[in-house]
Amino acid sequence: MAEIVLATLNAKYIHAAFGLRYLFANLGELQTRAALREFDINQRALEIVEQILAENPRIVGLGVYIWNVVAATEVVSALKRIRPDLIVILGGPEVSYETEAQGIVQTADYVITGEADLKFAEICRLLLAGGKPATKIIPAELPELSRLANPYDFYTPDDVAHRIIYVEASRGCPFTCEFCLSSLDIPVRQFPLEALLQNLRNLLARGVRQFKFVDRTFNLNLPSSRALLQFFLDHYQPGLFVHFEMIPDRLPEALREIIARYPAGALQFEVGIQTFNPEVAQLISRRQDYERLTANFQFLRQHTGVHVHADLIVGLPGESVASFGAGFDRLIALQPQEIQVGILKRLRGTPITRHDREWEMVYGELPPYEILRTKMISFTEMQRMRRFARFWDLIGNSGNFIETTPLVWHGGGSPFTEFLSLVDWLFERLGRQHSISLTQLGDLLLDYLTTKKLLPVAETAAILGRDYQRGGREDLPLFLRPHLPAVLPSRRERSRAAAMPKRQERHLAVQP
Image (cartoon, rainbow, N blue to C red; front, side, top):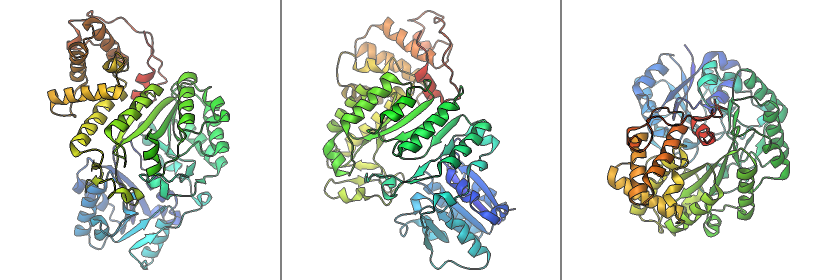
């Protein structure tokens, strides 16, 4: 039994709730009276409610995000119907802004906005002592990071074995990009470095090999980022995989020198470019030096083994399909291993809404609040771009078609235009963009490349066969059997820095 239950609904089981662990770690003397319970959005609401109520709590703290707010609303509604006396406290980015109109806020008892690491414990003490907060909406002051208790001890052995382990060296972002919640979180604050490094040592000693830093700008503070890179290099062992989100136009020599010494596949950089159109970047208050960005990409791809995951956004104010496509082609030329094509979302609290009238920005009313159309992109074209994003992820990003993908623009055409043509062709035949098996997609690609692009069947089938085998598969799919030997040539042992995610591992697979 627990008087306080801290809970959230993760997008997937593999995602451990980092914020809940901070709240739990900072409960102080209340920790023995509390329980941490994680669920995921695929579980039935009443089953979640049953497990929470089995603790017979007095207070439930629920983390609310854009990906779980619909399911969380159902959970809160059921909790309050069954136990009207139960005190429900909400927190998280989805309920930290524009709170008044949200149904989940109206149903709950209190909402803590902002960083609730310390404020949640304060409110629980007041409530358990019989007191009552003065207001329903409770703003949390920015906590001094050196005061926060360590959340990392609350990763369980099961978390270490099966889930992504999140860590952070800083909070905040110095930039003011209008589509991003981090733009509201100024200034950037650093966690004490020595304490963080000791926590990382402890996690390594417990067997953690995959670390995902949630910092928005890991390479902003040079002494800190250099120390972290040197730390993981000094403690490198096979299977280590560290993810950082980086500012694309800031990569000084002091960082380059360390990065170049890492084994291939040990580092992943998520590089948010979002747009290559300077006018669009100016509209959304995004500062970016494209010349430096290009030089940094060239360094990473030519002189390091970093896995580069780059981001572009469809639907920004002032961006047309043609403008986006030109940016996509420019990014393809820089050769990141993955390009995440994201559809613009209207996150609560972000100033992107100031463009709604001028650029005729229309968003969905329900989460994830994706853009439906703009002045520059009609709804029909936006739907095409959604399909483009989906099929690019299945084909270009997955690592299942590394050699095959460039064949789509074989002959020198625009990668964007040629891939969009493929997307239209695939959707015409399938009528859907989900529930497509790997072999079905491979069969369709062979058909398209040989009948539409007029590529030689035998050579194209051989490339598809190598891609298929790269994933560690030893069988030969039916669609390739008429064109290839019954047994594919054996491949050299793949570089299994493995413990790394499978998609990244496929990108690193040794060529025959």
